[in-house]
Structures are given as structure tokens and as C-alpha cells.
Amino acid sequence: MNDHVRSERARLLAVFDRVMREQARPDGPGGRVERVGDVVRQVGAAHDWNGVVWSAPDLDAARADAAVAEQVAHSERLGCDEFEWKLYGHDRPADLGARLLAAGFEAEEPETLLVARVAELATEVRLPEGVRLEEVRDEAGAELMARAHELAFGRDGSRLRRQVLARLREDPEHFMALVAMAGDEPVSSARMELYPGTGFAGLWGGGTDPAWRGRGVYRALVAFRARVAAERGFSYLQVDATEDSRPILERLGFTALTTTTPYLYRPASS
Image 1 (cartoon, rainbow, N blue to C red):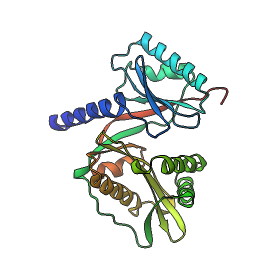
Image 2: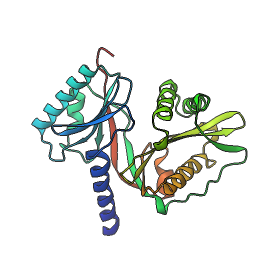
Image 3: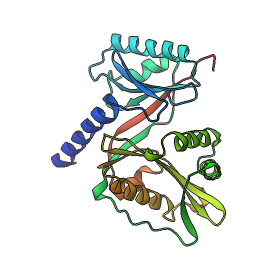
């Protein structure tokens, strides 16, 4: 990696840390963002996403333990289904993940944070023959999206269905959901969150039925969302990518900045 690439990655990561984490905004009308001591967290209803999005870069061992303990107590008071500490690869102290595990959190699979300049991405949508994209606007569309999610990831899509319907109802201006259809069957789906005032839009949930992978459906979903982000004046697209999608996104022009691992705490009362 040459000095220019290294410098650009460091600059993008610093912008992301400041704008999307330290200065985080709620991801929906029902949420709020709180700075409590050394962390910034999002708080919503018990079934919403609740979690830590930023921790102080100079966090030491003693302050880390205190912050973790406070978040555990907070999640218990809130009575949420689960509480997430979103840990990034460069967060400190270096053993923060181990401290979260010791406090009762469980680590999910790590992902890679990738960012791209919208102006540098291809926005031409090329779909395989017989496949079309439909924007999700109602309950029927959300059901198709949930089915596509289940096919792609092998996980129940009921929570996604509820989340999509809530976002469509509460803040459709800053949210987009898409499903790729082959005839009457959903084969892929994806979402985009548009974060006003940040310059960033987030790509979420992109997944394709294994029978349809390798045909360009995922790339088409990225291109479509990049075009919408460009039309809406956003400068950057951000993705937390699995190992399946990371190589595709890098080929499309995204830059890997760091890793991100969800640490989940599930209160005993949930």
C-alpha cells in the first residue's frame, strides 16, 4: 500500500468516526442519541436497535470497564430485546472485545467497513434477463423483502419485515428498500439509509438467493442505490460487509477501512 492510499484511508476513517459515530444521529424518528461519559449510544424502544456506536479513542482499561458496566445496567433498565456494542478494529483499549465478553456480551461475525465516494461509482443498472427491481412501499413489498432475506441468509425475516414497515411509515424520505424479482419470486433485497447532514448514505442487508448469485444482481442493487444517493446529493456510501460481499464491493470501487464486530448483550428479562 503506497503512502497516498494509506493517507486516504486514514482520512476517510477519521471522517467516518467523527460524522457517523461521535456525532451520530438517530436512525429513525423514534430514536435518540445520547453521549454518556465515554460513549455515544442510540436509544429507542425495546424492539428498536439500541447500542453503542462510538467510544472515546483514549479509553483506558479502568474507564472501559466502567463504561461497559454502565451500558449493561442501561440495557437492563431499558428492557430491550438486545443491546449492541458496535466495536471497530481500531477502538481502544485493544482488549475491549475481551472486556465485553467478560461482561456477558456475545460476539457476532466480524464485518469489514467499506466506504466509497459516490461520484466514483458506476450507477448503470445491469440486471440478468428476467429480473427486475421493485421499490418496497407497502406491506406486500416488505413481505417479499423478508422472503428474499430468508432465502439469502437462512434466517427468519419477521424482524426485518417489522423494521422496514416502521421505517416506511415513519421516515420514508430517508429510507429506501428494494427487492429483485424473477417473475413472482423474490431473489434479492437491499436497503439504504440516507443520513441527512452527514454526506453519508448506508447500504444495508444486500443478500441474494444462492441460486441467483454470480449473475450481477447484487452489483445492480449497489448501482441503483448509488444513483439515488448521487441524485440526493450524498458524497459517500458506507457498507458493513460480510466476506461474501467485501470482494465484490472492492471491485466496484469501495475502500476497506477497518473491521466492525457486533457484540450483543441480551438482558435476562428479554
